[in-house]
Image 1 (cartoon, helix red, strand yellow):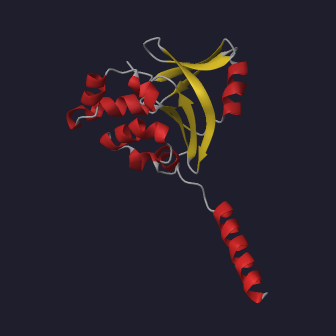
Image 2 (cartoon, helix red, strand yellow):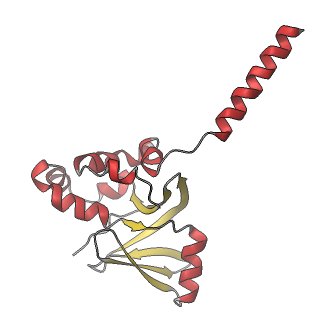
Length: 170
C-alpha cells in the first residue's frame, strides 16, 4: 500500500511539475512544429535564432513549409546561402513585430481601423493587416496577400500567427 501511495504521489508531482514549467520561447514553438522546419532553417541561416529567443515580446507571422514552397526552389536555395544573409534577414524580420499582439488585439485594432491597420515590422517597413471576406490577411509592400490561418501560438516571449504565404519587403 505504501508503495502504491508513493508511486501515485510521484506521478502527481511529475504531472504538476510539467504543467507549471515555463513555456518555451517562440523559437522553441517553431522548432517543435514540423510545419515550420523551413522557417527554422532560414532563421538559423540568418543568425536570428538567438535574437528571437530574447526577452521580446515579439509577434511573429510565421510562414509554413507550404508557404515557403510557393517560392521557387532556386530562389529559396540562394536566399539560404551565407552571401545572402542580409537579404534573408530583411525578409525574416519583415515577419516580426515588436510586442505581443494576440488575435483579440488584432481584431480590436481592425475594428478601430475600420478593417485595416498597419504595423511596423522589425525590418523597418509596414505590413498591412486587413479583414476581407471574413478572414484576416496580411498585405505586404508589393501588394501581395497572405492569409493568417492559425493564431495565438504562445511562447514565453511572444506569439506566433501562422500565415500561408511568405510576405516580402521592398
